[in-house]
Image (tube, rainbow, N blue to C red; front, side, top):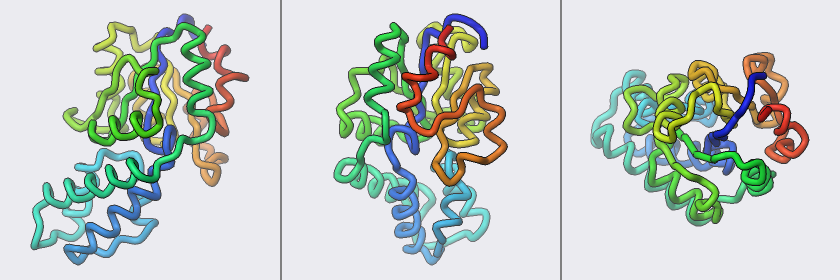
Length: 221
């Protein structure tokens, strides 16, 4: 699988924290305030997209009145930040995997579609900020995932070739972005999606981040 992975890039939502229930709850609550009644399946359909793109998606489906798109966007982020700060718990194997890659002398970064304030709230809540050399949000990129921009920016900022990067992702959009960036990628899907044949595009597939101990070395050499 190539040589010399020197930078490991973590996604955040669904990988470090199980934030998808928070997103669904926040979206359903805030969009309902303008008469758009989303279901949980509606919310799942936009998993992995940058949230401003989610707002645009629903605006085109059913334009609303009473609040601007920016107000809806910011209200959902407020709900998310509050939920993360008070309720977020690490996904299985998060700290163990970070320790593993740190002990392999890998540089570690985080690249997420989420806003920077949610990234900072998450790493502070989980007390893992010190592991990351760089935190990168796709919020100011022209395109979010599955476009590779956020991963390419992360590698460029740290002076690492994309071919020397390993991305850990839970969503198909994230895996697509990593592979479009010419990076190695491990998929760590939710259990109900684990057997989806689409994960074949990833270099490996893990049930949890605990698998880093068993299979990480294969990807680093």
